[in-house]
Length: 137
Image (cartoon, rainbow, N blue to C red; front, side, top):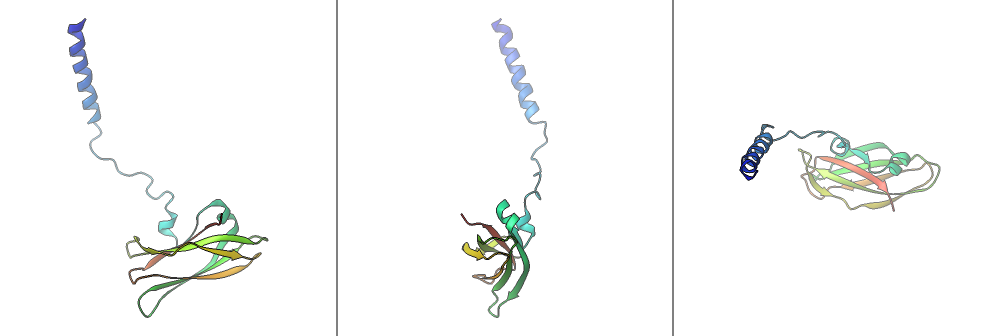
């Protein structure tokens, strides 16, 4: 019994090693564009409550004389009740990598009201941006 155990163990170990090498190398990433709206859009809603209650009626992008990027977002309350949300802006370089981010600020929206919120980048590297809105807790 012991004489057959060692060759059988060696054979199964060899089969396991060869099976592990059969995939042919590294795997390509899957679903790389799934859930990446923040990389594609200039305005995103971060949770279901904000998605239901808030919309953006317009975005304005301006380059200031010193080279910094200024963004103004018209944020609108879609509901007939007062809302409290948090909003910030993620500034990005030409390739889409973050250069700086504004702190989250609380925004009060009256019933069916609209507010303009202004953001200015801290440096001249920003050329893209994403305005993000979430429910205040």
